[in-house]
Length: 317
Image (cartoon, one colour):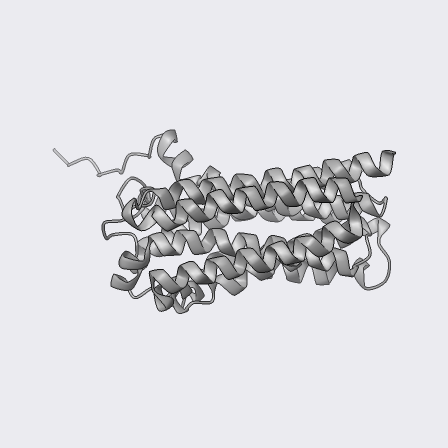
């Protein structure tokens, strides 16, 4: 009798859910919330545009997470013993072919959401901001950057350029570009807010890279944290947080009433104190890196949300 063809079973939904890395999604949400906050400040906010931009950002983040899982498995970065969450492809939980299909589907959904976003925003824009080809180019660059971080023949994340890419795409392009799609003007306070958010997102990536220094070096992945070593990577982390706090200070001074600014600054300093203490103890408890990564991501979303609420209350008064 002819033998039956061998088929690979599909991974259960729980495996795919883990591969999406939902804990990273607050960063995409925070960037779009910050852009909406800038638009609200200039009274050009549109609810439909916010939903479309949030959908596009979340899908792009999911695409980036899946591409990172696929790319690191292909280059051997996640095959070593690691303290982070299990990577589905490297662990054999999802076969590469299924992951490639998921990446294609996610990319198509992301492009469809991006076109929906442009269909809402472009009719209301003027001048250079109304050039459809510019936004299509930026969208293509965002997808390419998400893919090429760890996938492809020469992933830029393996030579230490991931931090700069995160600062650029999660900060300046996401926040400023997102606010321009509403019709908002670019101001120095908005640049400060975008820079601060980009630095915070870079700090989240740095925690991830500090945790993975041994396995990254073994796989030839030379992130900034791996190049610096654990001790100096911790100092680099402190610099990122300090510069972000200074940028947020510019935003608070120019955008919110004194009492709201003082309360938000106090909340920021309290979290920084907790975060610094936890990271100092992380080398003895490596899984603490995972906890601090999740806590910093959630704090970023909540803090930007608190700014947006304060902004709305201030303008309503």
